[in-house]
Length: 243
Image 1 (cartoon, rainbow, N blue to C red):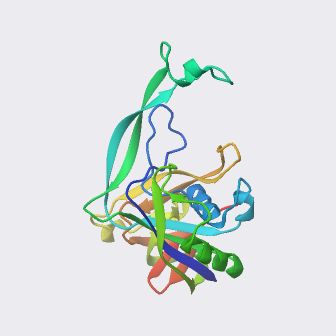
Image 2 (tube, rainbow, N blue to C red):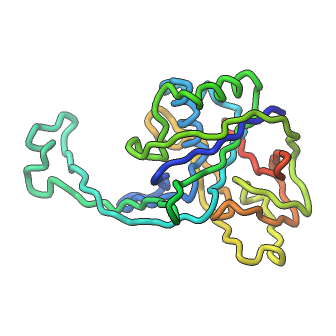
Image 3 (tube, helix red, strand yellow):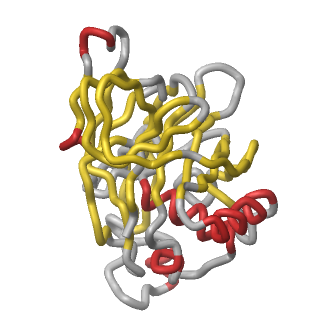
């Protein structure tokens, strides 16, 4: 199967956990729903990007350690569908509310970097390869102001198979099919959470799955795994189907 691989880089990131409310906490890597949005932005798609990119197999991993920074941001508290100028300026009692916002920052001077994989129909991936070199819309690492760029965009051919035993894999893995080999996993940190796979036009999650990945992107030794895997020259990569 044809796959697309590229590095997504930026100075800081925030991938909001969809279930947080008063505190905006972040995932350690972009969820599949965010990756779809990034690919759709590169192609210049509108709200229909979710349907048009349906069927892709996606994966991502952070390249190295990251640190977090928690900052408070001021949000306006608007009480009407058509807020008045006074409300928009926050000039009334309780007009503003502070929300903790968690950012991901690099450790050291190099920018944040994520290795992204997308597998699917070759024609679409070829268009994505061109689009990522010159995106129609700016790419971002979560929030609109957190600008990003793509490097090392390349196509490859690999084998996709369902599950394996006694292997090491990177990227997103289905938690229900995961059996780590803890005897060989010394020093590794497994992050497990509910990730949105697709969003609706109103940004509400349409599909959610419990996924896992190594927090610094290192290969995770597995006794067994039940789920789609991509074999590349660099090793096995866990894949997640969207749509």
